[in-house]
Length: 344
Image 1 (cartoon, one colour):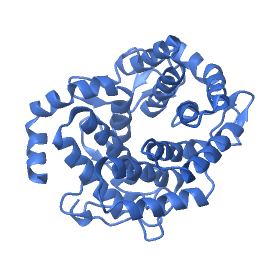
Image 2: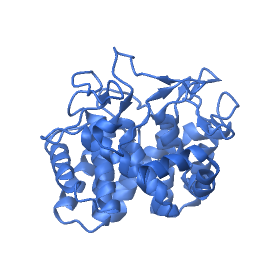
Image 3: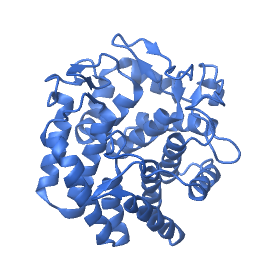
């Protein structure tokens, strides 16, 4: 995407079953690529690069970062969509206006991850502006949980004590909004959907950093009430998307790390198995031959479409396998090697 820089990259937001690109137009035309997806891609590719040391993954992450920075305004907020590959920013769409909660949070997380991994001098000021916006404005728990991930990344690098204070406040916000033991995404719901529901996972991770066993207990109670029955039943809802399953995998993984209890590891693996057919369709959602993750299961049928979100979050959910195979897969695909050469 040259408008964002000579090496800038973005994911096409949607594709059909034949890999033809599709635009986002559910609520009127929004565009063809978005910060929501690209920021998640920055995090994924940097994690893969740090795991494999393959320089191509770092180059692609840096190219995606160029796109994220291109979409930021001087006040720290981000627009979400570009309308075309010339880089025309959609400034007013319902899922693209400056400061929208999810895409701003994901951009903050991407900048925090890139700041630590790349040590790119361009990042510090944009990160400070974006993080300041997040701290000064309210957010629902499912969005605030993404802010917590960014704060945890920065705290792991030793950036305290101001961050610790912010992190504790955000975790208390998340923990306080619940119905019974169940952590909610918003105050007006009876039972939260699992799409993007990672609150139990971030509280478990933060509990260790902050030495707050109360946060871990809150996370455990909510997970046992809301999430483990869904895993045991094989995700029985009429519509299940990869992001919901990936969120469940993340929660179980962080609870396993925080507690050391093998039950959470078992639930994590059962959730991962959804991608390979442990679902109401009885068919793989991850087509390992084509390298494509479908957009979910609807009424017992695998959705043939395959968007950026589905593939990114599935790669994160299946990270150990993906990391093991990354260098081998890259070497087997000439088109990717050519792209890396052009970027270099």
